[in-house]
Every structure is written in C-alpha cells, then in structure tokens.
Image (cartoon, rainbow over all chains, first blue to last red):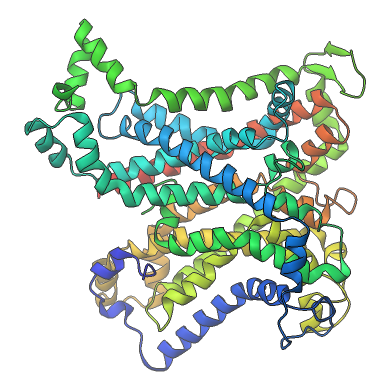
Length: 288
Length: 310
C-alpha cells in the first residue's frame, strides 16, 4: 500500500522505463535476489530464534527444524519485560515532548517565520551533527551530580534533545505544504489562531505529525550510546538487555536471536508502516 | 493575536525598520512558539559542549581524588601525540570512509534496480529497508555470533572452512555489518532522487539517440549528484559516531585494530577515568565533525532551494 511513492504514481510511464520480455524478467530476478540477500540475515535471526539451542549451533546450518518457543520463553524468564517497558517509556515520552517543542517551533519557522528563521533552522541541524561522545562526559558528570543516573527521565530528556532538530526540520517541511491561501482565508473569515490551528493546520499536518513521531520513536528506541553509559538495571532500555549476550557464546544463540527479534520488532514494524515517510525523515525533510 | 495572522514576512520587515512598541510586541509573538525548543536545544547541547571545553583544560583523573589542576592546552598535546588516539583517528577515518563509500555505491545500484517497475517491487523495497530498522545493537550481535562465528556461523556454514572472521578481518567485519545496515538508508535517498527526475529529459535524450549508458552517465548521474552527496554526508555524520558495532563485535580489538574515536573516548572516560584527556579528544572530534558538517549543511541548503523552487 505505501510502497509506491506518490510522485511516481502521478507520472505517466514513458517508454524509457518500460521493460519487458527477457530483460524485464532478468531485471526482476536480479532485484529480487538483491532484496533477499539483504534480508537473509534478518530471516536467519528470526529462524534461529525459533530453534532449540542444539539446532541453532549446528554446522552446517539447519534450515529445516521443528520450531520451538524455548528461546523466547528463556528471554522472558530472564526479565526482558522491564527493559522493554523502559524503552517504551523513554521512546514514547521523548517523542511526545519532541512534538510539543518542535511543532510550535516549526510553525515559527515556516508559516509565521521569525526574522532570522534560516539561521535558527541551521542552528538546530548543527546540534544534530555534534557528536554524542563530545557531550558524554559533562552530561555524565551533571547527571551523576543530580543523582539522576539510571533514571528513565534522564533518557527522556536526552532523547528529546537528540530528536528535536530532526523533528523541527520535518515538521517545518510539512507545515510549508499548507497552502497559505487557506490560512489567509481563515483569517479573513475572522477565525482565531486556535481555530485556524485546530480546523485547518492540524488536519493537513496530521500525517506529517505521525511520520515525525515514528522517526523519533525509531531513533530513541534504537539508541545505545547514552543508554549504556547512563543506565544500569533500573532504567536500562532494551539494547542494554542485549549487552549480556556480547560474550556469552555457544549454546545461547537461539536465546540471543529471540531477544534480538523481540527488541527489533517494534521499530521494524513502525518502519514498514512509515516507509513512505522514512526517506523524508532521514534526510531531515530535504528529500521528499 | 487574530489581527496579526494576516501579516506576512514583508510586513514584519517593514516594521523592523521603524521600531515601534507594536512591532516589537509582534516580533515577540512570532518568536514565542520558537523559544521553548530553542532554549531547550541550547541548554542541552551547547552547555555540555562548553563544559567539555573547560574540562579539556584540566588535569583530572577521577581515580586520583582532589587533584584537578589547570593545565591549559596540555591535554591537546597529549591527545595529538598519543599513539592510541592517533590509531583511533586513523581507524575512524578508514571505518567511516569505507562504510560510506561502499554503502553509497551499493545503495546506488539498488536504487537503480528499484527505479523500474517489476512484479513485487513494493515487497523487495520492504525487504531492502529492513536491515536499517533492526536495532544496531541487535544487528551487531547477530553478525558477531550468528554469522561470523567460526564454528556455527552462517558464512562458514554455507561456504565451509573454519575462518574466524572477526579476529582475522576485524575491520572488514565491522565495516560489513555497518554497510549492511546503512545501504538501505543510502538507497532510500538516492531512489527519491531518481524518482524525482523528469521523464521528459530522459525521453529527449533517447530521441536524440543516447544509449542507456550514455543517458545514465551524462544525465542521470549529474542530476543525482546532490542526492549522492547528501546521502554520503548524512551517512558520514552518523557513521563517524559508530559505537554499537565496535563495542559489540570487536571491543576495539584485536589490540587497537578497530578502536575508533567514540570507543577510545569511552575507554578513556569510563575505563581509565582520564576526564581531561577524554574531554580534549571530544573537542578534537567535534572540530573534525564541523568540517564534514559544513559540507553537509551546504548540500542540504542547496537541496532545500531546489525543492523550494519546484
């Protein structure tokens, strides 16, 4: 459903792109092979998660086996749930906070722009380019001073700042698509600002808001660097659960793959659903 | 509030030249929605950096309590002459450049494949973006244990042999994992570029007798240039900060073979507790990033104008 970009759909298919016959079939086969090759490790992860540990560590690899849920059971027995909940809380709350901060800011950079909107916009994006390693030490010292180490709210604030520039840029690119004639017409009719926002802006921007939320969710859910340095057992997010698997080799492969599948699942699903908006978010709204 | 809605940017500019109280108030109502986000961004991102600058001038090891002397630029001297850090710098360049170049090239190839209609194109696109969505930490573990492992990894399981991929080819192992994750990112941006190309131009080239290869190198590639640049630069900004893959797959080893700057700074901070040195190294990384970022910003603003002109 979301697979074909709209611009392509609205474009007539010219002779330059029509591929048929043997060449067309070869093209399709090549593309499918490439797709399957890239997907193979993911498939392997999912398959291995359903194996018994003996099958998981077999050589040559077992492609056919009786699927069992042992790996998943063990992962939940080892208390994966709190980590998932921490991730969910940090990602959802920071996403909410990001949208609350970024949407008005994007409004002040697009529909009713401040004088130096261009500079502000580039200031935001430049903070995204600041490497996290350079900020780790002062943030760590400050958080420790405040007694907020291993606290989920610390992660919420950090993820908010991490995603804020992205969200400002994205929301701005969506707000710019609101026809200015519409806003002027509303003002002519004497609509107040709140009415304009609720009745005109929100319905048009809602898909953009959802897309921005998904991108922010993806990045906070997957974040590891700050999580590993600032959290431990109480506020550990799902990638922290995986740290235990770094050295444990051998008979834990099925369990590892089960855990990796579970923690990746929310973002994979979110990304599949939002794939049309993904490119826009990843390029900060520069590419549509 | 209501009466200010109609005032466009032109009106604001007029007001700016003769500052009357009403104009000042209007400027502030314009700024108000921006301020929370702006202040938040400044507090959370700029202040830590200033603190890093300050810390980088201290001789401060957390294991030696009470000693926190001002040493000026000595830490920088240490950072720039230290063998480990220089190795880390070199590794960062190799790791970033190799991952970016390979994933941009692969991404370009995949984008070209996906730019044509074929049965199941949507499914193939979905399969291709999945590696980017897998949690980086999970991806690193998956590659380390399920794919590279010498005795039961997928590679040796398929091609045979007992090569210990991670210890034989540590850098290649990390780069391969990163390329696998980042190729979809590059592909998405390049594909968006390909699909925004006007068909009339391509058709005109065909009518003028240009072959597919000529059309590609003379028309499509130049057209794609900003998209290629954007994907490479955004990719560099993220990949320079690679931590998960190094932390998980090689722990920077063997020796310092795959220690990049983020991992080295992590070690300096949390294993050696040399806070001053870690801060100085952080500043060096920022300076390096600024160089890359300046180019990135230039590309983004040119795309920005292109999209605006459309």
